[in-house]
Image (cartoon, rainbow, N blue to C red; front, side):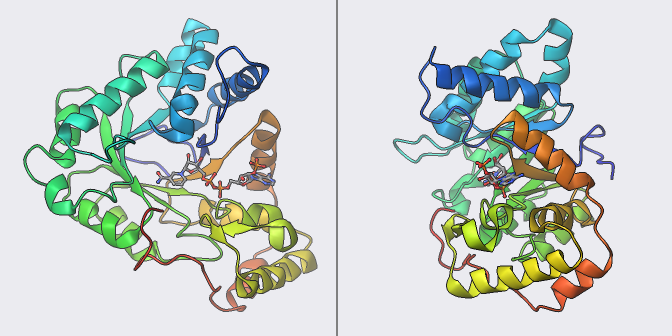
Length: 314
Ligand SMILES: NC(=O)c1ccc[n+]([C@@H]2O[C@H](COP(=O)([O-])OP(=O)(O)OC[C@H]3O[C@@H](n4cnc5c(N)ncnc54)[C@H](OP(=O)(O)O)[C@@H]3O)[C@@H](O)[C@H]2O)c1
């Protein structure tokens, strides 16, 4: 599917939220993270990071990796990089000034003078009335685009009722939702449909629910960053039985559920190593018999752990 805002967008975007987590500069662990980042940047896929990921280490490691590429590779990879502006982690403030500072921090870490794609990230702690007022985050995001500091702007978060308000402004070109268009939870359907109708480019992040649908019913511990309930584990085991009958893996089905959705322009999957990248590509290419989709649907709605009415942060 082509996207008006990102004509060269890849169906798979590689997520880097834990990249470099806990590593110190110059350590062997950092070197391993840089090796992963180089593989992601050379892969030809879009790469998704954020100011706050791994306390800034995700962007720092990507910056080191960019510096190790040839000039041509670097320009190519930088053109597929997406980052996000975040609240000040000490004060929680996410106003217009913080948007500009956050973007400057990102550029310094990445060693770039601009990124083409910039999301406003998880604006849960700022009342929408503040975000949309003069001096607020939305005005600052629009100003960055108008000044040419970035090409297009997006809203990236999970809670559908919160994100709906940002989509309704018409200010944003991109939408990223996570954990809400998967085998387990489809509560993003309405908002993604609205975004598509508005001509926005839609990213669907965390097709494995962050864990459960990648590791399976026996080993998975969380869905949407919350503990897996007994009911959800049992539903997942039934989905695995369907997959086993057809000789396919649950994680391939989980990934392709998102890849085949007409609502989704790109699926953002968390990649922690070069080996995981190869696995993700294989899962994306696996042959899945048509019957699988109907048989999983026939299991009925999964008992999701997403609770947008009362979730505070996720
Ligand atoms: N608010 C936002 O903007 C937002 C929110 C959530 C996510 N995102 C973006 O979306 C990306 C993906 O989200 P996510 O990482 O939470 O969820 P995810 O992609 O659903 O799941 C990632 C998990 O799946 C595992 N995994 C991946 N491939 C696997 C394989 N082939 N076999 C077994 N396990 C596999 C990984 O395990 P290992 O660690 O063992 O590799 C990791 O724990 C993030 O990195 C971020 O870029 C954005």
